[in-house]
Image (tube, rainbow, N blue to C red; front, side, top):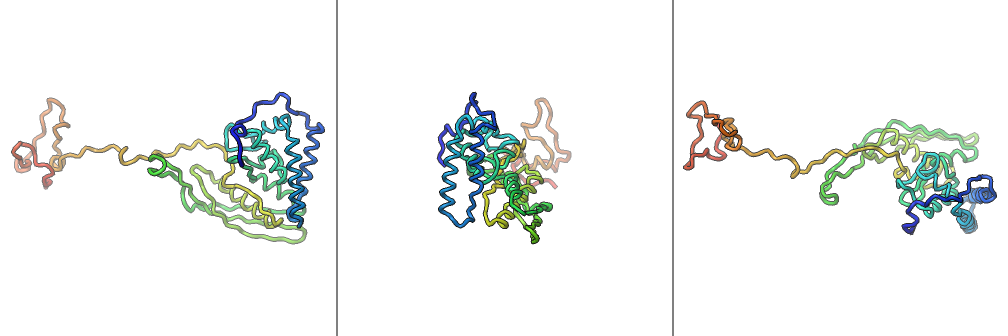
Length: 306
C-alpha cells in the first residue's frame, strides 16, 4: 500500500463532524455495510462476487467523507474503538482503508475487533470471536491449557548490527488448546498444539490469548472453509515498562591491575599501592625475600613462594 506522509499524520479535529447516528448519510452507510457482509466467496460466483465487493468498497469510500471520518478518527488507540502501533495514530487515508476492510470482513469498527499495524488491517481476538459468534447454528468452546516454556526470551549483545547494544531475542512456549464445537446435532472435538513466540516481558495471559486466537482462527476455517487474516503475533499489546538488562562488553568491564606474581604471593604491595610516608612491609624471613636484579627490584613474574 502506497501512502503519503499526509496519510500517516493524524487528521486535525473537524468542527463539522456528523454527530447524529440517525442521519440519512449514516443510515445509508449501514445499509451498504450490510450488503457487503452478504457477499460470500463460497457462493461459486467469483466474478460476480468480485464486482459486488468492488461496488461496495467504492460506495463506502465515497460516503466516508471528512465529516463522517472525524468521529471515527477519535476511536483510534482506545479500548472502545481500535488500536494501532503508532502512539499518535494514523491519518485519514489509512484509517479509511482499514475501516472499509473491516466492514467488508464483517466486523464492527468498535470493540477492538481490528488493529492497524504497519498501515495494514489485522483482525484481533475480539474480531475473530465476533465472526464465530455470528455463524448461524454454531456453538463452541475453546479452552487453552497451561503454557510450557521451551525457550526463555532475553537479550544478547549485538556487535554486528546494533553497535554492541542489547538486542531482544524472543523465546518460545508450547500450549495445547481444547476445541469443542457443534452445528445442529453434530458434535466435534479436537486438541490443538501451538508454538507461541514469547517476547521479553510477555505475561502468561498474553501467551494464552495468542493461543486462543489461533484456535479461533482454526475453528473459523474448519466450519466455514474460509481462512481469515488474524495476526495474533503482531496484535497491539498494552505498553509495558520493560528495561532491558545491562549487557557489558569486555572493553567496558573494569580491569583489575595485574600485580607482580611474587609480590602478590608474599602479599607485598606494589610501589604505586603504598601511601606516601608508609614503610613497605618486609618479608618475615630473609630466605623468603625475592631475588634482586641489578636494579634492586624483584624479578618480574618469578616463582611463587611456597
